[in-house]
Length: 443
Image 1 (cartoon, rainbow, N blue to C red):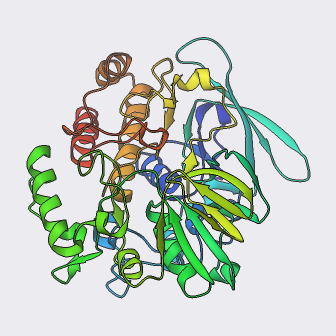
Image 2 (cartoon, helix red, strand yellow):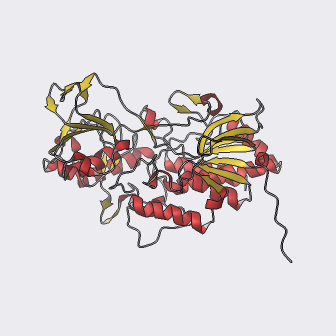
Image 3 (cartoon, helix red, strand yellow):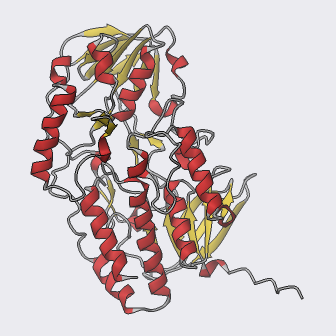
């Protein structure tokens, strides 16, 4: 006797989940675990987000690897294979997310090739349904009302392009347009910004370009990928040190391994270690020390092919590549609903919109070493909260009251730089502790 086919769950009883990158997959897995009906939407044809280089919105390049090691980055319930490199390439990571989706049968929950174009509350109530409109392809716009929305479309896809005085007559690009070092062949190249991508790409350019310089505004702390033969982020004790001790201790260890970058022409950092994201790169100082990469001051203005620097020097270039980061980009939802203040949304634990019971963001965190498990724990908290609400449990009411108040201190005692890219920066230990504690109250 055949089993009856269960009726599909109507949309107003489902959660709409936007994105199938690492955070979206973490969201899908945790909703699935608790039996919460949901509909996923992904603009691309497959999972993986930016780590799937075939995705037109991907900003990774052919040489891209993790800057954190696999064991501090992987999902705890789905470890990477021992055969995967300590610092995996984008190819290995794309395969990892594909395998994760297959292992937990997550793909069937997503509509691929479906771009979300509008998310809006149906009423002014905190418990409102949400109207989600999507481009289903060929210009077909579809709308449906959902019980709640989880936004997990990532933070590294919308380029932040600076404005410069004057006009540059060569190529002026953002690193989001960079895929392969052949772009640099025979050219005089200037990379603007010495963050992790800027340093990686400058090292790429050394092997193809006629010359390579890197323009910097501030000093940096450079962390080698290996210390004592092991990935740098796997060293240290299990218990986090107080900020002031860790800053002093790690800065001293760095001096032993990398020396003082000031002698290579970098400005002295005007902040303490970990108050901005460190640069994890073992090769950039090597190439600067060998004269393959020159360090230049901040840009004053362009004049044709000539770049005038603020220290009074000047040099000619054919290509300028801006490694100037990315903006938070949630174009489908009004900033008001996300409680956007200044440079970023102000959300409880960087997750929950204070004005609504059923609107959450996954992945809006930056932290040194937080890994995908940190995002998984975010998703676990969201799923438990939505489940507790649906069951009318008192823990949900307590959580609702907590998220209407101030967010706990997530800095871990560090004074982070007041920059746009640091507007949602947290200390991984303080943050994961706060998220886990909140999730435990809802278990």
